[in-house]
Image 1 (cartoon, rainbow, N blue to C red):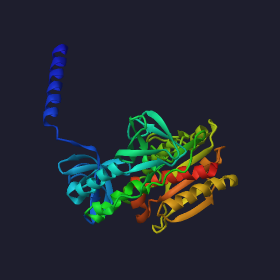
Image 2 (cartoon, rainbow, N blue to C red):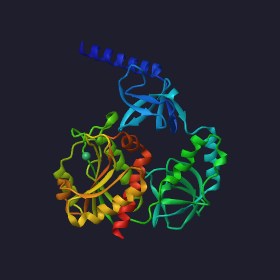
Image 3 (cartoon, rainbow, N blue to C red):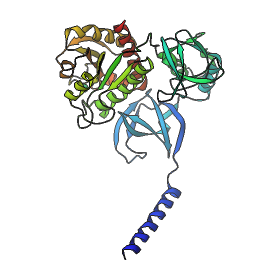
Image 4 (cartoon, rainbow, N blue to C red):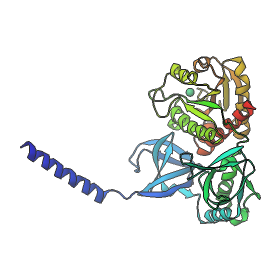
Length: 379
Ligand SMILES: [Zn+2]
């Protein structure tokens, strides 16, 4: 009896697997990712690819988003760190034919010079790929192709490798704008790779602790459009970690996922190492919705120069209001023995700030700014 049941169960399981395979909705995985711009005045962000699913937020006209999957006329993207869906017919592709001709032109013509003191050349377009070669400030390479923020370059030995675009500067100026027919779209795309100011030095030999605030049961602030602080703090911190590593720093993080870490534990992690700087990443909120901007906090007076260097680097790289550096008695700063700062990278309770701070572009620019601020501080 028992045996018969288990065979029947097994058989029905096989059937379920076969049917779900045969009738599963066709999910087209984009080749890498696609970038779109919102064309309607507002666009609902939904939890699933259906008009019946719950609305979790809203994009506004001009917002750009990167999509990862397409299904039944819906595309999947990320919002506040979560997987969400939007209707594709309210989007215009940023990578249309006129733009891709610009891109291919760019690939054929540009060369880049290494701007940082030393840079790793990798086997693929990302910091998770193996380091195959090293390059040094002033080295020049021909660009073969690009993917996201990475350039595939030709190496002197005939091989190819990938280099982080934000650590290079372009030789021979910008791409001619006349090659793109739609100026409104082309501008943002042709300018995209140049928006990353190159890191201006190396952090080799320095140990930096990055402390992504909140996590798990502690969401931090909940902003407009249901943006959760812990989510954007986490994605921003990942950009910071990647860029610090690219600049040669040894990076330690106090949380590497969505889980709770106490303030005592965060400080203890930092104090366990020969930490040169501790940087806690946060986003702000305030009941008065008009309050906006970025702030760097320090607890110990001797950490004021660290806060000032990072804050002035951020202020010169992003469009948000500069609220300066201020002293505040935060426990996580008080308890860390290394020079420490807590960065509030914009108000998610402010509509202007929250639209900007969620973007990959903002988070990457902040990451570059923090890296350059640290380089300045250690000089
Ligand atoms: Zn916070």
